[in-house]
Amino acid sequence: MNTGRLTVNETGQEGRYIDLVYMDGAEGDEGQDAAGNYWCNYGLRFLALDPFFYSSTAVTHLFRSDAAGRTPFFSMPFLGLHLNRDLAFNGNIIVSTVGEVDTWPVWVLDGPLSGVTFKSVTLNREFTFTYQLGAGQRVTIDTRPGRKSVIGPLGVNLWEHIGSNPQFWAIGPSENQIQLAVAGMTADTLITLEYRPRYLGA
Image 1 (cartoon, rainbow, N blue to C red):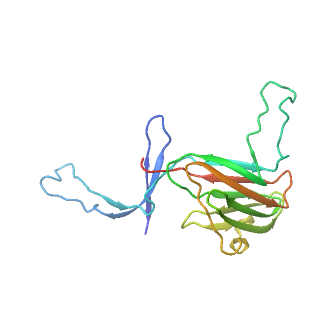
Image 2: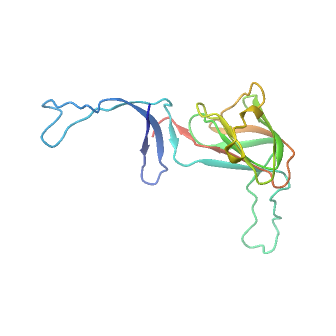
């Protein structure tokens, strides 16, 4: 079953897409009212396994330790303003999201670390990942339905390091209260939450 993608672009707005599977209609209708010498109408039918449109642009939120990457506001030179936009983990975090429908995030872990508990305080659901990840190593945890995977350095499958009975959770429109508990971290540890907003229509 081959999947195609329908993308809708409007001037001044981000593109949105939906993945579809062709059903029928390409055979056409060559009746008098549906075709001529140089034209033909086709009524194509598609099946969308996920009925919502996705943004063509992914949204990311970065999480670091409280002390990592923090630059004093009055650093020299002062002009240029030193703003710290990353969010600190090991505590409750409010993440504001865009979109109209719940969506499942992809988590990217950059070591060093030895384990992470991902908890949605909003939904009271959580899952854990325990693995000794060294500096410069990366793990990607994809929680999207139908694509769930845990891929580590060199493409190694690390699914066995997800805790038993994982409760993967979605993030909803507006605000989400999230709690990350990270073990074995340093100032170089970085966790990235990435998602694509979902919409009711194009």
